[in-house]
Amino acid sequence: MSKIPVMVNGLPGNVASTLIPHILADEKFSLIPASLTGPDTLNDQLQCCNMNFSLIRPADRDAWISDVLLNNSGLIAIDYTHPSAVNANATFYARHGIPFVMGTTGGDRDALSESIVQSATCAVIAPNMAKQIVGFQAMMAHAAENFPDLFKGYSLRIEESHQSGKADTSGTAKAMVGYFNRLGIPFGVDAIEMERNPERQESVWGIPSEHIAGHAWHTYTLKSEDGSVCFRFTHNINGRDVYAQGTLDAVSFLSQKITQGCRGQVFSMIDVLKG
Image (cartoon, rainbow, N blue to C red; front, side, top):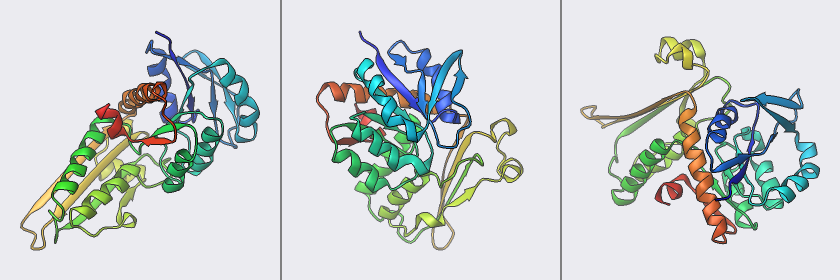
């Protein structure tokens, strides 16, 4: 069985770096020793897991990619870059016909999907690659579809905490807003309460100190109008390893779709779980 060549973009970022040992340990994949990076990255090289990676800045990537594609048929990109780079990266992948798995949040999500629909490639795009969280979202989607207005009259509070370096509001929390809206609760994404202060995360939230630099804690609290009923959904992730297996499952899923002739399609992680 031939291996799937993958390129992890976003080094030296934390999630991208976390993926490297998981890919190297999985015989289904071969890893390209290079990564698309940001314009302000200081170094041209990075060592991770005893492997040297070339860091390719935006100004250099179009000239660089031709040789990579020539020597790596079936290449799939994994994107864990920066929210500000989402749309430009998707345009780059579409222009060169590179299928990709994108876990990066932020950007113009409608334009992101449209850039793929109008292209000859395909992608898995999801704000969360943790399979169990995606399964929870699927349950919420089922409830929203089958029991509209179930929580009509209830109030909603959404709290999310991530490491201080996360630049945007949680994509998972934003997605949950849509489900709660369909369940009868008017709530806007601008009402999501973000926590990025390490001192408060440890002293108020109780997040373990060793995970302050890498965590994703979410709580959704629903209360009836008279305060007599309260529902609370919580999912807390410490570290980043949970995202790795979901990401690699998405790569395998996308590779299969490519073999079947996929073009101009955007898949979600729920598609991956079903597939």
